[in-house]
Amino acid sequence: MQVFHHLVYEYQKGLRDLSLFTCSAELLEKIKKALVAQKIDYLVYNLKGDKINVFFGCFECIEIVKSFSSPDLSCITDEEDFILGMMLGYAKLQQYQRFLGRKVLCT
Image (tube, rainbow, N blue to C red; front, side, top):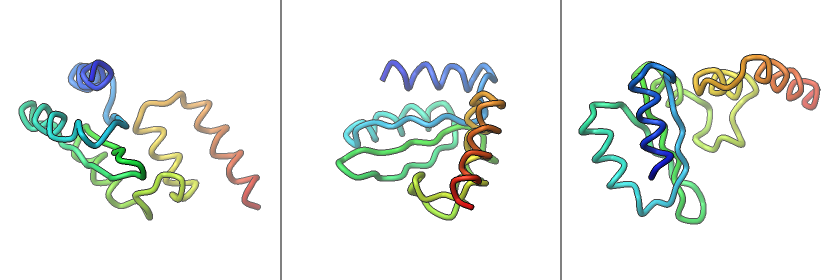
């Protein structure tokens, strides 16, 4: 939960527009309670093996994630992967390289 609270802090300070926290499903109620109390939009996707992905941050980013072709991040398109990386605040140059690398692999 320490990582979760740090991500919340970074979002509240404007360092991130969107965060992704992967954890055990047993933490879901605790996480939802914290996000609701702080009026932070969120989206939860169930994963295999009793794990969850919790996206949280600005409403617009949550809506974009909802629009992706699949809740399974290994199945999203190259463009969606790029958008997600940018929203999560990953290094821009690495995202450009990742996108180009995925495009080359698929052609």
